[in-house]
Every structure is written in C-alpha cells, then in structure tokens.
Image (cartoon, rainbow, N blue to C red; front, side):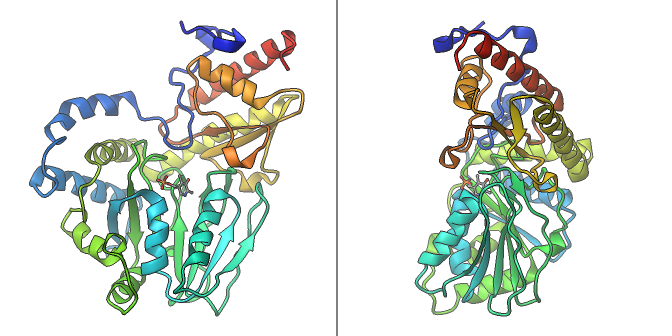
Length: 381
Ligand SMILES: *Cc1c(COP(=O)(O)O)cnc(C)c1O
C-alpha cells in the first residue's frame, strides 16, 4: 500500500477504484490494450509505416471509425500528426475561406478562435462567447463560410448539441476531441468532425483524426491549390491523399494507432457508439447525483442539460480545498482529478470516458467522501 504522503492520509484499499486514472486526456488506457501492444503490437513497432503491417493498422482505425459513426460512403476519414491543436491551424488554412463564426466557452474553443484572429489571410471572426460553465448559442450568419463548434468543452465540462446552421456553402467544423466516441453524433450535421485519440479513444496523444464531408473535401482541395500559402505540413489535401492510401504524410505514432484500434474494436464489440454513450451517461449520473447529494459539492454547470457526460466538473464549498482532496487522491494512486489549471476554481474535474468503468466512478465518489470526512475531522481545511 502506498503511503499517504504529505497529508499522511492512507485511503483504505477496499474503497479505492480498481483503476485510478480519471484524467481528461491523457486518460485511462485499458491494461488489456497495453498488454496487446506489447504482444501483437511488438510486430508493428519499429517497422516501416509504408509497408503492409502499419498500413493495415491505419486501415483498421479508418474502418473502425467508419463503423462507429456509421459514415455515409462519401465521407472520408483523414489523419495526420500533431493532435487537435494542429488541426486548428490546418482548418485556418485549408477549411476556412474568408470568415468563420466561433462558439467560445472555455480554453479549447477560445484557442481555435484565437488562431483564426491571428491569421492574416482571414477576416476577423464572429465570436459568440459565454462565461465558463455556460453554453453559447451560435446563430445563422450570411457573412461566414464556417461555423466552429466544440461538442464538449473539456476545460469546463459543458457540452453542446451539434446541429447544422446555415447552408451548404457554410462548413460545420466540430472540435470533438473529448466527445468523439463517448457522445452520440449525427455525422450528417458536420463537415469536419475532428479529434485526438487520447480522450474517448483511450489511446496516446500525437495524432489528429478528422471525418470530412464532400463539401469539406472540396473546399480543402480548392484552398490547398489556390494562391494561399499553405505550409506542406498543414496541407490538408496532402493528408487526404495519404489517408486514402492508409498512410500519413510523415511517420505516425504507431503505438497510438494500435491502442486506438483496440479501443475502437472493443467499443464496436460491446455495441458501438450508442453503448459507449450510454455508459458515459451512467457514469455521469453517478457523479452528478453524488455531488447533488453531498453538503459540500455541487455540479459546476448549473443547467443540467449542458452538463457533459464525459467530463464532469464539481465545485467544492469554501470549507473544503479541492486541491487538498485531489492531492490526497493522487498520493493514493487516484490521479488527475484536478480542475483545469487556467479555470482557477475550487473544483475537481473527472474524465468519464468509455474506458472508465461506471463502478469505479461510484467508488471514486465514496473515496472522495472518505477523504473529505478525514480532512474535516483532522482540521486540515
Ligand atoms: C484535449 C483537447 C484539445 C487538444 O488536443 P491535443 O491532442 O492536445 O492537441 C483540443 N480540443 C479539445 C476540446 C480538447 O479536449
């Protein structure tokens, strides 16, 4: 048993979750997938990504996503190196033509808006912004050629419904980094549904993946061959052409692809996206229900329909220090429950991605209650 470290609190073993990883990305990677990586994955690691074994792996990921999201045949799965953060720059060059609208409600959505504001070739974007914990309402505007939404704002735990706005020539660019694979989506409502693998897909970081509609494909081909300067690494059309061949522009993170393929196939074998989304909702019910039932914690997001099923944020009252609670948890092997650093609230933030067992979420709440009781009894707070 680990020692309780600075606070000296040792959480009784029988209270603890089986797996103590509750981060919002990087997030829990199932032990089975890791052991598969060291066995079957051993044949792929350290081999050429231009040869059949790694290309077959890329194909598994593309097929898995195709099935999971029940993609219409004309939609394509595209991937490359650099994570969702890189995709913002790609979108700025290869998907937004002149002007975009952004729903901003936290750190991640604001970073994309910021990247667009700084782009010299684009007009100043329309920004619909709310304070953290609330959800903005994007509106139809004839001025813009792209709407930029975030299905789940990971920094605050607010999610938004994804519905098409405007017409055919206005693309729907959806940052689904922490939502894809854990929340339902009607892909017809999107033109670029993009994400990284280290959240709902229980993998490691390093890659971006994007599901592109025919209109997004057309726009990217046109912008990438126009007189706009598009750096080679950010050329989306080159990534499309490579992805069609089950390749990437440059060397991909092979272990990340392997772990993602494992998670995709596991999710599909359990019942697919609706199963995964139901599992996340079950975890969320347990967590928000617990918070509402305590005398010291409350869900941060006031409107229950805006509360994320994949990233739960819970405020503590002033008598309890959330940092103290999360550090006792960390010393006992329950990690990454800290709130988003820049939000600066007395809060815990819990990743409830599909790999997390709802039973462990229940155990987590019991564990937190125990820690709070001990801190109160010991006069720590
Ligand atoms: C984590 C996250 C990102 C950034 O992903 P990286 O892989 O680190 O680039 C972007 N958007 C959202 C909504 C996220 O949750």
